[in-house]
Image 1 (cartoon, one colour):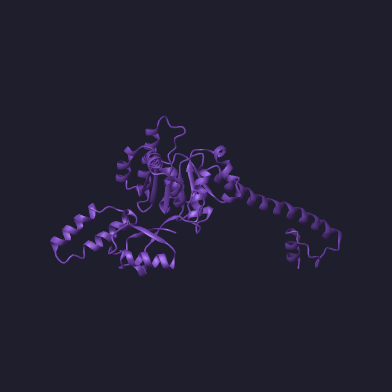
Image 2 (cartoon, one colour):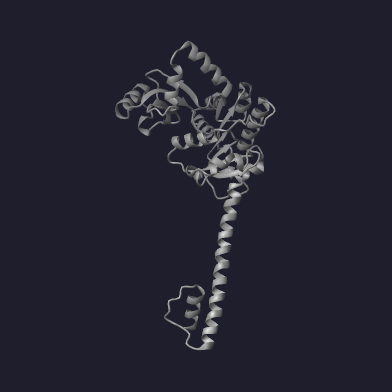
Length: 334
């Protein structure tokens, strides 16, 4: 009974089923109550301090995301970073804000509008140079599924320096995690070859796209509105989509897939992307297919051909008898 009473008193529950009746007992009770309040306060304070300290370190970018898996890294900072995050989450509704990790050296002041926005509650942040190995390790890059590398023009001495940093980041990402899908933005087209050699999966050539859009809009009136609709810039219902080939369409012709998707899913099929997948996965599949050759000379020829095959090769408006393969994606307007 005395142990039960002590526990109830120390935890400030106070059921009242056991009470001291003597003066000495009440003195002991007062001491026990005081000790209980101090003990509970210390324990709660330690938990709260640990939680807020961890959260504060996370917001300041000094944490380490050792338990994250399949996260999306956004390396670099730009003034419209918030809009980039919103668009990304709209395109992948199965992803949560907590799956995104910001990696940059912008600091709290520039990122405060993101941290204070309820839509981004739970977003992760690692502060530092996104091309440095130790910074990417803090973001647990080895378990990340994809990364977006943004050109940081602000603060760079020139555009070449900004693009060079993007290249350095891509090289570091691929060295730490060869399977990660990397999309890189560069201003100058001269860095395209470097990024391709670095096994960058997607390359955004800002300057080249701007020039092409300017000239095409001059010659072909209305093309900017078409592009806006297809990319969903103005919130249109019709959007350009790339998706895996359904298992039921593998081995079918392009015309069969066109009719099926048009009638059943209201998707207008306009092309194919061949040889899809990450660098490692694609090579493994290609080598496995090449090894199915009937003789040694054919095997060597097939293995040599693996090196020359273009990954993620777009084929727009292929022939009607084009046969869909397992490793191709479909391009359509939904």
